[in-house]
Image 1 (cartoon, rainbow, N blue to C red):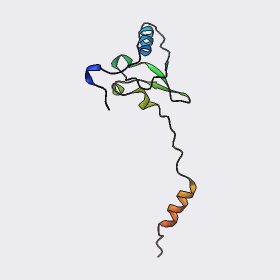
Image 2 (image 1 turned 90 degrees about the vertical axis):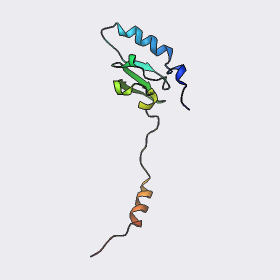
Image 3 (image 1 turned 90 degrees about the horizontal axis):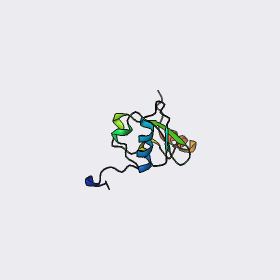
Image 4 (image 1 turned 30 degrees about the vertical axis):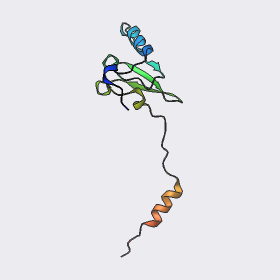
Length: 100
């Protein structure tokens, strides 16, 4: 279910404080965050973030296209390794081979 429009987007207060602190500094270090549920707002454009996915921090530089999305969309928590080799062999044997 989507968040109501009158409430506005959810952004963790700690992220807003960190952005305000870094805005005035010449060297912009990446900001570490565990808040995957926070929405990316226009103030975040151009900043680098390190988003925790449960195991490691995923680097992300925010662009204008990302505004309105959540941080969690850009740091996947699961990794697909492919199907087992036995499934591949079974699929190959099912397909008939044409002979001339």
